[in-house]
Image (tube, rainbow, N blue to C red):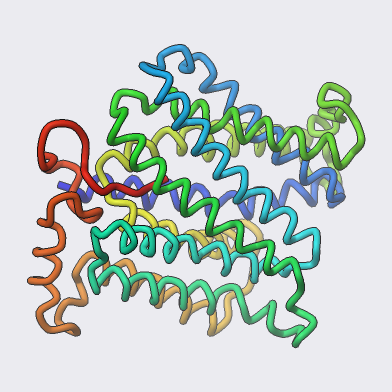
Length: 345
């Protein structure tokens, strides 16, 4: 059954969505400087990398190591594009919407591989992207033409980096099913190195000279002294090392197109956590966006089959096709060795 892996992917997405509220609160406690944000992100990935570091030695081959590094580099491209876009004036909502296009990138890679993409999946992708647009774009568009800038083009590196990382990860887990932990560890290490390098370049200081101690006593706005360290521990251990390891396990079972549709719901979770923790307001566009995202998830599970005659037959044919990306990972591969046409992060 796939539902346990789908549920795990939903939980992972919820954790990543919660990061926005946790990071926003931490930035307020730190004082809100951009350098504080870079230091916070670097600390998150350093903690995550240290937690998984012991598992590097368990890699079974150089190919597994290379796959882990490749996934980490692609994720670093996504994060770097996001940071650069925001620094160039891209609105956070616009960046989030552009990032949601990763599900389109994954679906296009599936189509390009010859595996094909089911109509239900394309519809689910469209509904999810439309839902993210409703959640994120109204605030960005309220600024008129000034809301768009060159940073929006840079932000396109997000769906490319994250989407391709999913494609590579799916391939890596099919080729190296026993290397979940070392691949996750390598991914964290590569991203941590990139994040620390970015913080060092921006502050003009060596990594060991960065003001790490600033994270230990951040009490701006009346925040408790333990607040930011706790946030770093949560984002580093739970929403980084734990979720990245679980993602590797999930991608060994769940087709990348399915996983990318679930991941597109991240802004919905971010909105929910922001409402609960920060008291963020909810407007009509938020409700419509949430409904569209939930509709996309339902469509991808075949719950909207009645709206598209013959959809069930088409899906059955698609998932049964040899080497198809939507073939369930708990089915036997089409022959000795690994899957034929795979694509994934």
